[in-house]
Figure (cartoon, rainbow, N blue to C red):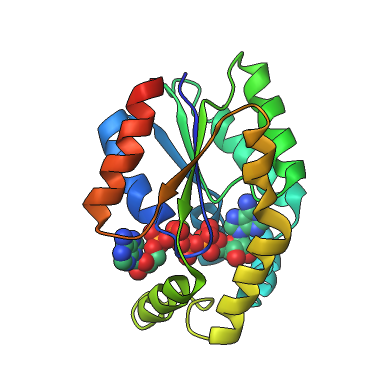
Length: 191
Ligand code: AP5
Ligand code: MG
């Protein structure tokens, strides 16, 4: 298996690059944000609980997202590898993910971290908010709350994987294709 974490703050391009990477490398895309938005669209109890937090720009509880990832991995036993997008976002999620992969005799091969300035992130998210219909993209105070959660709870996930030498920083500004080439080069070295 080849397992990749595509890491970075809100608006850094995780979703955009994930689409291209799964097409190129045949990995299964697991985005906890997409999974949560689909729960909201289906008006499940989990979705309704998550929506309150997501609308404020806050993280949903670890147990909720870990449960979703566990189920998604179980439902894809034939996957040749997973691309994790927006997960893990806390140390507890990182430890849980390592444990889930360990049960499959697998591990994270690399964490690729997209580096983008806050100014650019806010510009991108407000711009997407004009058309995305995502309630967490329209208000600047909610965008700032998301960036705060990232700084306080998530940024250290990169340090956690760096202890085993798995974290690689990637310049996340420039054209989508340039960034895709940088990501691909790091994957090709390891695959
Ligand atoms: P989630 O859905 O994961 O959102 P996010 O991390 O806030 O990030 P985005 O999806 O907004 O950005 P992205 O990095 O994917 O960038 P994109 O490619 O879209 O999470 C949403 C919420 O769910 C969280 O706030 C939390 O409440 C909850 N949640 C999710 N996972 C969780 C977890 N594990 N634990 C707890 N809670 C969780 O690009 C952004 C924009 O920029 C687009 O318009 C795009 O077209 C544009 N763009 C992309 N690349 C470029 C480029 N190179 N140049 C210019 N523009 C670009
Ligand atoms: Mg995304």
